[in-house]
Image (spheres, rainbow over the protein chains, first blue to last red):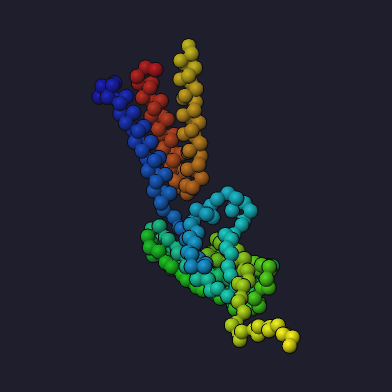
Length: 184
Length: 57
């Protein structure tokens, strides 16, 4: 092998290493476990992507995702677990509603979920205002609850701010129209 | 002389940009991925060094 072709071989091998680094970035970024949460509030579906929980301010302050909900509205949740790995993912999922550090209601009680390799699993549940065991908030009052979704060691928090839905008075008989008295 | 200062400045910006991107990407890599990247980076610099040595630099 000539000296030039030998030096070129080193260059090609170095380029192969560089291509390998790029391939690791792509493949490693794709592989893993991803969870997406879909919450429908006021007929609008909110999608909470896995990236949301990776943001520094969410991680550091351990903040949840905030949503405003009208009292009386039922909130459907859809939790999708995407297993992009070569082994089956087995985990316990627990969903509960908390207020002031106290558990109010358990929506999903330690449900064992199994996700096959490179497959997705969807878990869904619905939260009704009646489940919270409180009466409707009065005008101007806001009530906040935390929905905790625990998947193994990982916890996701959704903060629900309930506001009262203004009610309209029922239609009754028409009010009598005062007739001015006429002097005769 | 002035052109070399500009070259140096450009190279510095490129290296710092690539370094910043690498740091950002590395955050999301798994531990085996980080290790493999480290091994490949070491091999890449060693091979580049060998290439330039063979060329008489």
